[in-house]
Amino acid sequence: MKQDESVLNSDGQLYIVPTPIGNLGDITQRALSVLQSVDLIAAEDTRHTGLLLQHFAINARLFALHDHNEQQKAETLLAKLQEGQNIALVSDAGTPLINDPGYHLVRTCREAGIRVVPLPGPCAAIAALSAAGLPSDRFCYEGFLPAKPKGRRDALTALSQEPRTLIFYESTHRLLDSLADINTVLGSGRYVVLARELTKTWESVYGAPIGELLAWVQEDDNRRKGEMVLIVEGYKAQEEALPPDALRTLALLQAELPLKKAAALAAEIHGVKKNALYKYALDAQDNG
Image (cartoon, rainbow, N blue to C red; front, side, top):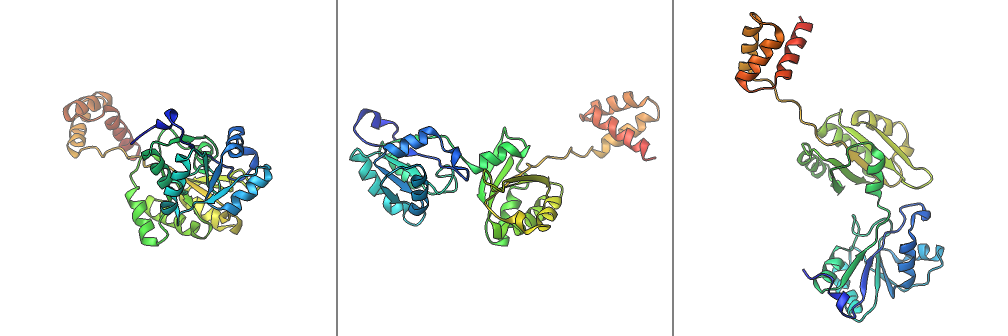
């Protein structure tokens, strides 16, 4: 795939411009500068983007680029870029291409040697993750779960042993069904955070084991309204069961040796963790 050839020629550049997910104050100065200077803005919804531009007093030509026409219109925009025009790509809210149109256009431009310039900015998935209190060093973004029950449960089953923190977007009318399926497939103890209406007036971030979270959402219809992100705790593997042979050896050694010594010897013989055997024996004593 070609990259950065436009630095050496007269082609225009494609800018990927994030826009606010709610609070208009979150737009960056660089985003405003790009939107003011480009020749054309490719927008998911020209009416929605028009209101944003009007708020910031930006006059610009708009071009509709959405899920239903992107593959057909990508070549049209490429031709304009090759003529030397600069184009900004925006979605209705947040960072373009994150569950929004733009992939085909970006791919087309990169294959043609057009420089694609990404701007950092608002993204609901990352904003929710930063406030969730779940591990964020490794995470897995999954977009929207399937709409149909079987597809949704199959998707969750495939992710049931994924150790990374999971991120989903969800809609108002499917929230309860999705939470119920998460509860069924992943278990009622799996911790889930519901981040709702981020950066807006009724913003809320609430986390609990999924069984409790589902009950909390059911208590108030308002808790299922708005734009929503679900942050789901990753799978935590349980400690492997101790081999029966190791437990029998431990029992025999315990009859003749102090517990710590018996656990150490049994662990060495069977190649298991000494502390696990020791804890098992203590628990057995406590339980009579």
